[in-house]
Every structure is written in structure tokens, then in C-alpha cells.
Image (cartoon, rainbow, N blue to C red):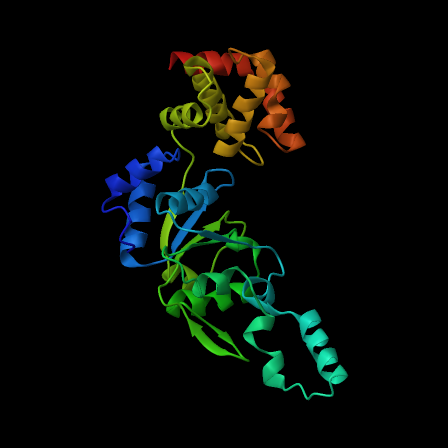
Length: 297
């Protein structure tokens, strides 16, 4: 664990709270144990619950550089690990020919032609702080890329055929996130400390809203959190996450609203729901009654 890392789950929570990222006991403990055990941290949960933000906040708390790899279908080693700068290599060949010099293959595959991608950058990092390597939305990548990660997560080493195996002098802090659009393989999960990031309870969501949007009043924050909870309880295609709740609150602030009633909620659903079917279903709900009922509970 980094010397500057928090020494207990309570210290993790306090540090992240001070950075504006409010965590519950479960996530604070998961982060602390992943750091202490030197394991990658795998955060799964619905989109918008703050998994990516957790990695960003952790990097800030540790005063560490954040190196992010955004996963997508078809992602391969070239995009994640390294590429050779073929244009510069070709230019070197032409310069050699112009000078009537023989350019050896070893000269072409030298460090100066190597372009680091996120994983290699994290492995070769030599700064004072250990970097946080965020492998974001790993479930979007293919099975082949997931298998490629096993060497990194097991040995914190990568292999470049022309240069050999490169090992991290100090392993990076790895955070993987998944929206669970597909199941990850057991081999990957075994190498990680796993934590499911759930939607926050209403009190914590109110605290998040007030922390991120200080200009938001207590009453309106509670109404927005209550309305978000009501929508999550409905059978929606994509229930709103914390990110959408924040967007909803921002939209209400722009409108100058000082309370959330059924009419205002219906007019601003596009800030919190992103599927036509969900908006239509929400419009069929009696939002005024739901807000009133939750205000009394």
C-alpha cells in the first residue's frame, strides 16, 4: 500500500468525503482492502452510480496520476498497450536510403518509435506517486481482451515481442469498472477484490446532491432524491443513477425551481430518463402523489 494511503476504512471515507465523493461503509472498506492487499478493485453496478468517479476521487485523495483506458467492443492490445509509429519508422528508412545507410531492424523497433498506450504507461510509470489505472467498462470489451488482462493483473507485466517483458517497478493501483452488460470470466474476478456499487439510500443521495450542488436547497434536494427513488422502484429500461439525479437537480436550478411538483417533474424527465419507453411510463405515474407520499414517509 502507498505510504500516503489511508490506514483504515474510516480514513478512506473521511478522505473521499473531503474530496466531495461520499461513500458508504461497504465501498470504503472495499477500497481500503484492495489497497492493503495489493489487489485490483473490481466495481460492478448499474450505470451512473459513481464507479468511474470513485477511481477519479481515489487518485485525487492519493495525489496520484489517473491513467484511464476506456473499453469498447473490438479493443485490442495495440490500442491498450502500445503501437509502433510506422510513419516515423518509414521516415527513418527513407532518411537512411537518402544517406545510403543500412537501417537495421533493431534500429526501427527502438524506444523512440514506441508509442505508449494506457496500460504500458501505467506499467512503466516512474513518478513519485503510484498511478491509478482505471480500466473503465471492461464488460464492453471482448473475451480476448479480458484474457489479455490476466498477465497484467497476475504479474503486473506486459510483453512486447521486440523489447521483451516489461515489469512494473511498483504495481499500479488498478480499478476496473463494469456495468454488467455481460458476465466477466471467473479468472478475471479471482484476481480482483470485488464490490457491487448500489444506488445510494435517500439520505446519502441528498448529501451527495448538497455536496455537489451547494446552491441546491435542502427541500428540493430531498424531493429530487425521493423522485429518483420512486422512478427506480418502477419497472424501467434504465433506472436513473446518481449522475442522472445530479443532472435533474441542475436542470431544476437552471429553471429557477424551488420545489419539485408533478408538473415540473414531468417537464424535466428528459434530464433523468433517456429512453422513450421510460419517459412514457413515468408520465403515466402520478408523480405528484408519489412525491407527497414520500414526503410524509
